[in-house]
Length: 132
Length: 201
Image (spheres, each protein chain N blue to C red):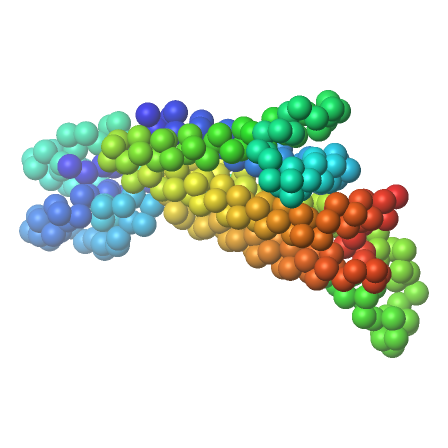
């Protein structure tokens, strides 16, 4: 069980690592997807509506990563329950650590999307175009 | 039960057996010191001279303390990983300071005398440091998550190396929150210059 939890912890961390690497190396794609998500948030539709949009390959991968991240939070809670029944301190601690990181990022991501929705799509477009 | 460590002259004994074992060692005239073992929670470490090793073995055999000792060995921190984590910790702080320094000088240091005396500090260079530095930092943030989890899974303990990984992540998260606060200020400034952070998104 310990090995399974270790592998799960590393996969969880990898998802966040890849998302942040996207942010570092393809900020335009990141901004574009965030812009679309902000639009959806503003219109009050479900965030999954983004899959109906015409997305590039990079954007598609990123939206899938976002989905994987969201699903991972649910899986994390289940793994935490499993870790607890193993009565192993390490299993519980590592799962709690991952859950804490995921929740902190959820809070930060929510505040960014909310901020972009508040300032409007123009704000982010203006910022992106300034980069070039 | 207890377990022999790889190093000679040391043995780990379960905390609840430690006082009994100490008593027996004293009765056999073995000189020793005791210390709590942080890496092996629940065990006390006994340190004694090499000459007393056979005597200690007799004692552990007599009281059944070595029963399961062969399968477990004392956990020790990996020195190479420890050193790498120290370097990574310093590198993270350096990146953050470089970004803050460049950002402050670009935005507020136009008339600062010391800035004007340093010939190579051009606005382009400073903007470049902020822009590229922030990209490196974002990558570093993801890397710090991965590394801290990886180190924790390897060490399985909250020791110095693991704690360093957690501290690096915490420092990065605090900086992330600061950036978001600055970004919020920038985005809400309608029609005013956006500053170098604007180029980062």
